[in-house]
Amino acid sequence: MVSITSNSQTHPYSKPILVTGATGYVGGRLVPQMLDAGYTVRAMGRSLSKLEGRPWAQHPRVELVKADTLDAESMNKAAKGCQAGFYLVHSMISKKKAFAQADKQSVQNMIAAASAGGLERIIYLGGLGEIENPALSKHLRSRHEVGDILQAGPVPTTVLRAAMILGAGSASFEMLRYLTERLPVMITPKWVRSPCQSIAIQNVLNYLQGCLEQPATTGQTFDIGGPDILDYQEIINIFTDEAGLSRRWIIPVPVLTPKLSAYWVHLVTPVPSSIAIPLTEGLGVPVICKDNRIRDLIPQKLLTVRESIRLALQRIQPAQNSTRWTDAGAPFQPEWTYCGDADWSGGTTLQSGFRCRVDQPIKTVWQPIQHIGGSTGWYFANNLWKLRGMADRLIGGIGLRRGRRDATRLNVGDVIDFWRIIEAKPPHRLRLLAEMKLPGQALMDIELHAVSHQITELRLVTLFFPLGLLGMLYWYSIYPLHQWVYRGMTRAIATAGDGRLVDGPHTYVSNDQNVCRLP
Picture 1 (cartoon, rainbow, N blue to C red):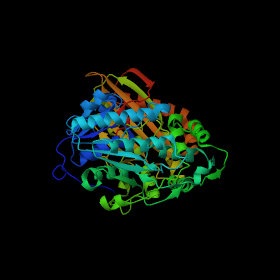
Picture 2 (picture 1 turned 45 degrees about the horizontal axis):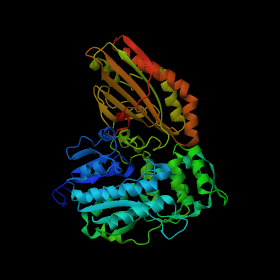
Picture 3 (picture 1 turned 180 degrees about the horizontal axis):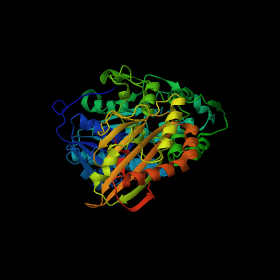
Picture 4 (picture 1 turned 135 degrees about the vertical axis):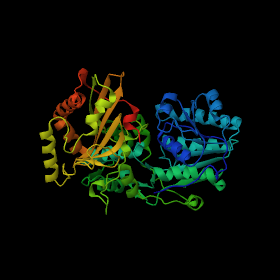
């Protein structure tokens, strides 16, 4: 575990800390860490509804504010009364090819707002890469330029410069994930041999928070990176090892330009070309730390590339020496279900779902859910469930032999056949994580909503995160069978208590943020 501890009694900030880009990848993870450390945080984003949808939005020490860095007036209101601020925005996504000019305008508005609002410090996260290198991409040049503009302003600014950030949801990591999983043979530009000193997202967050707490970092520029300097081919090989994939054939060719490879990324992965192009254009330049001064000022355990990828993938590892063998395994939700990341992040998430309405109170409809699995079975196609359990045992899985610890109670961490309970909120929700042998990870989400005192809506959604091409083939090959089974299961659960269906079951695609929210 990597952490920097603080609390409201020890840190010197009595006023709110402004976090710009709070709905972004880094900002969305920094806000809860700062709240846990005892800070009052003013979370800023362009969409108030997106801010309100975050799991930390109701925290008593968070203030939500709608503002746009290109709107000077809104920035002035956002910064007013704050003591320090994190500048974590850039315009690569929103302004596409015009991002460099938009970045200049945005940072000037930030400086003006920080100065007028009385901010004592600004902390900015930029990018590595030598500015003197003629091959430096427009994206990285803009990152350097923003840092220079901030440090030339009246508010002391600390600049952190990072290379590839390793963490589920980051654009660089998702490009790595998709390409490696989907392409057994990879024809790449020669940048695949460029050295890169990547860093884990948790280490980045700790450095950001640490700069706020370490006065010696004020006004300084620091390179931040992990302990490994590897080329991209080596990083790809580590990813295949940790993801359980075979080593990829990697063939570097000199004729494939970064722009052409970016369009290939756009075709093969969900990462849009507006993000892929500026990122891949910077891959041909070495991005390594020139100094490590920050390691002495803000000591922490730096995760290796292997540790970072392992954490991002979050595969379930069997626990050792458990007091009860069925309790082995951690009752967590995988990081790929994290709410708030871009829709292309976390890998491809597939789902199948149904909903129906029944003329029974919610507590009555909950009863069959309370008893699901074990000796009760799954209410529909039980022989197929048994067959699936037998197949799982034949390939080395756990099958259905674990049953249930308790026939009536649902406790987080308990098992139900080859599922594990990761969330149980009677009479509203049961969430199960699959532990059978699969080419990916699967969740089953069963929700009840009271439409009226007598009418209840039941929703049953299965989510699947495929591992490579085999996972995709698995999902689509059994998709018709899944549709039949889960439709029947939805109907059977709804009517198990002698209820009468008044609507459905209908196909249901969940857009509810609670489906991806961490508990």
